[in-house]
Image (tube, rainbow, N blue to C red; front, side):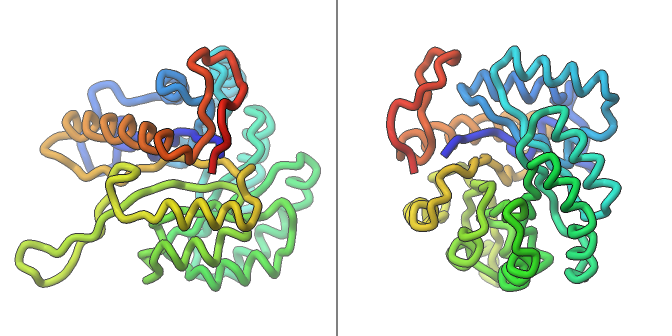
Length: 285
């Protein structure tokens, strides 16, 4: 699989509402250049670094920067409002993103399905896929029912390995049920720890390979369903640590550790150290 960064890999460096902003928040351009500095050639720019406030000229300039850095862009938003999705379809066309990743934010899946059906002809015309992320508001069975009902080659799942804890579902359940619909993968590792007074547990983020995510199950499921062409995006749940600056430094360390781990287990494509060379050196996933 082809690995990329996300604006949710470096969330603290961009800024989180309710916390002090970083002295120099990471910008769209900065995220693209960070991706290249990590030896990667794919970035997913999501709703914590929204693209729709940018003008047409700014989007074209961003595409030019990405081309100069040899980085491909995937676009993301949240919600199923048709006007929003069509706006992001235009952005995806400008940035040559093959997908628009989104999250269903209403409990009413029937209403969301109707909104998705409304925009599907426009997505068909551009041959751009809608990647719907499991985000904890709905169960995997509900999402499967949605995918089966839509039954469209340009609608699939942006599978996040951890988000469905919010729907009381573990990653193995998520992988089993949603991999058949996979178009985009969010790799997010985690740990579960008992609190110090022993009365409960917390679910925490972890660098890739340092938590409890079952990479062999994930790898085997991707192969079984022939989904190796889907892209894989690294995301992190980095815990706040004393200050925004210290936390941003920690997420940078986690990012580097995660990329190194995913390469070490050959989960992703490994490129030649000459970033202009796109040849894959060995099989991945």
